[in-house]
Image (tube, rainbow, N blue to C red; front, side):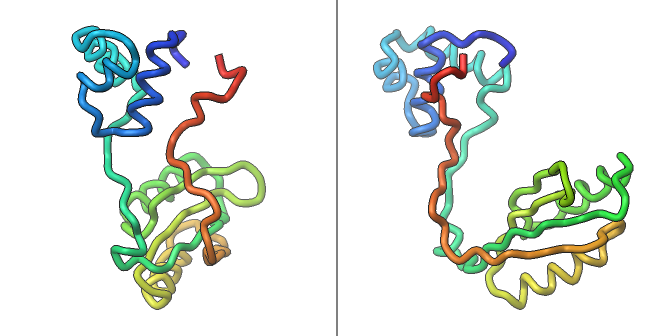
Length: 159
């Protein structure tokens, strides 16, 4: 963290994580301050990068994306320019929803969604042909046991 967050800041962040559409008046009431300083605090938290944005969480399956797959990608080169080139490649791929660079044998893990297996297989063919991709191992998601988009602000010992 770039600064110490006080109890009110943490309450604001907790409330915004729970309901990104909360009004400033309701937020101020829940955290125990008046609306003007509440709005100033929210704006400061945004400007300092604690709040990256606001968005709705959509149900991929209801929207026709029935396939979720994790793809472990191993590159043939870990040169900085090759790593950045791969990151640029995945940023341009709409089926890739998340991309994480890892340490160890796997260089990147990708979370991908697709409407069907044929579409995903076409993507894997495209992915394996990308520059410096040595191999790709995929794991089809059978079931999601936990999904929590929020940061666990209530975990003890974080301050």
